[in-house]
Image 1 (tube, rainbow, N blue to C red):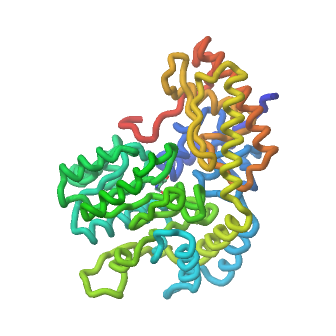
Image 2: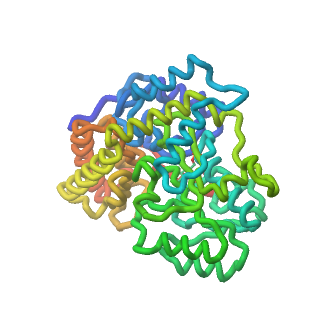
Amino acid sequence: METKNIKLDKNIEMAKKAQALIPGGAHTYSKGDDQFPANAPRIIDRGEGAHIYDVDGNKWLDLGMSLGTVILGHAYGPVIEAAQKELSRGCNFVRPSYLEGELAELMNSIIPSAEMVKFGKNGSDAVTAAVKLARAYTGRDYVVRCASDPFNSIHDWFIGSTVMNRGVPEAISNLTLKFEYNNLDSAKALFDQYPGKIACFIFEPIAATEPAPGFLQGLKDLCEKNGSLLIFDEVVSGFRFHIGGAQVIAGVTPHLSAFGKAMANGFSVSALVGQKEFMKLGGLGHDQERVFLLSTTHGGETHSLAASIATIKEIQNKNAIEHFYTTGRLLQEGMRKAAQDSGAAHLVDIIGYGCKPGFSFRNGQGEISAPARTLFMQELCARGILMPYVVPSLAHQQEHLNYAVEAFKDACGVLKKATEEGFEKYLIGDAVKPVFRKFN
Ligand SMILES: Cc1ncc(COP(=O)(O)O)c(C=O)c1O
């Protein structure tokens, strides 16, 4: 495959301005320059379907789809029309819009744990509201998160438990404990160590690894036996693994769960959902002490709620979830074959479910390697593909997959050569770095 002659002059100029004016040059750390190879686009102009266009006019096949939010494709007609209709009728009012009840009703009808719903604008707020509610309901302070979850929230209870914990009081960090996924004993040990003190377990119910038989139900039983709440963070898995969330696949209904990312095809909506017994504490219909749950100026923004209703209906009508699984599987198989044909099978790990496939890259010594990952992304960029990770969407069609798999083959070939001749010879910029690190 020919590599493209990509000019990034305007990209570089505009990114310089952004770096000078915005800490990190972007509003999500995972969009930062330290996450992409040097030949990646830096500033995006627009998107359409499975493609995005940068400010120099270069066209890119997008495999990341806006951190997994754009589940149907960029500028997807029926969602845009639903949002536009509400925009022209006013986007926020002093009392709730009819759309709040409408979307809540729709969510209650498809998500097993949803009996009541509270909307927010981002996943972090929904997850943190779940933690707050669990603490309020149980009257306990400790929160247990999963050691292998890369991210659950921007708020202190989570960030304080990472290596990038500067600015979080130690007293807060100390209240967040960690358990191991698929290891019930690690959960039991915490209940033994902190009897009567754990408010909740909060984690992604299914991510890259399949839950071991009985693990999730066992954890729910343990939580209930010990008076704690089970919370699923479905910000990524919601509307991707199943229309009702990964909790449907798991066959386990949590007490509370949080949704976000894909629920409005990129519009800003998130939701805390859960059983009435807990959720009602944030409302007016009880005589207990009040809980300040989610309360945001923009939570009821009409066009985003309309976008969410349209997105959910499109996912249902277009059988989109099945499409995600098939798309991801084809990319996984394509990558496997590309790596084998290039003699690079030992350099690429292929993991995860089709709806959210994962790829990691190794060096010649068999270690997970940032230079290897960067070089792979660099070679895809040279062929017009942006792949910080892969999040299948309805917009990804067979022709895009064929093109991507062709490019995988080239990139695997370069990766193989670099392990023999040195990454410095092939990398044109710095290697990417993990977001969560102590120093720049
Ligand atoms: C699993 C998970 N939970 C929560 C969040 C937070 O979502 P948001 O960025 O919308 O606050 C993220 C974001 O990446 C996530 O991956």
